[in-house]
Length: 233
Image 1 (cartoon, rainbow, N blue to C red):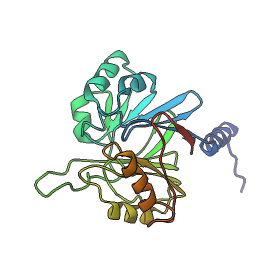
Image 2: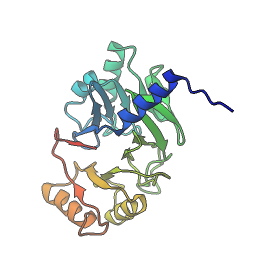
Image 3: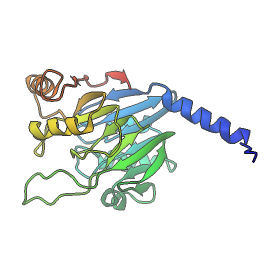
Image 4: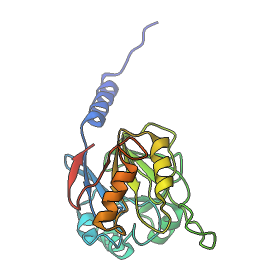
């Protein structure tokens, strides 16, 4: 039996595989906001009201991901303004957020896979971490980008797949270092980067890196990037 492989399909697969192997540049911005850039493609995640340059980042983004509805993860006014300027701009987010933003927003849930700014994105998790029994839990989705970088939003949900670079939230009314340590241990990433750190002083961020880092509870260094600094992932 002869198996004929169409050259065009094979070439496309090879190009896609090669693209996914290339280093991607991750840039850290205020609080939970990061961008992932490959050449001229930029994917923006969680441009919230705590990110002073959210409007500027939105203007430069090819696609946007929003993990949940809390204002420190979505600057709704800035996002609405950018969507109005660019009818081709898409936002992938929870059903709760998508319902507020209109046709350019795509609701996603755990198990979904899609392309955004040319990046392959997989969705993991469904709910925000518990803050208090008296506060309802909102929807929250984590995004695994290019099968290598996982942004969990406000959750310590453990994806059922390998993660090379894990973004670890370290401050907020729902966070707890013990749970964060168990989160890193369960995910077993190659490296970790600190996000959601705005409520910690410099001393607090250093303490988080010590407690959750290589010589602490996880055995994996917790890296801290200044706002605007980048690293290859």
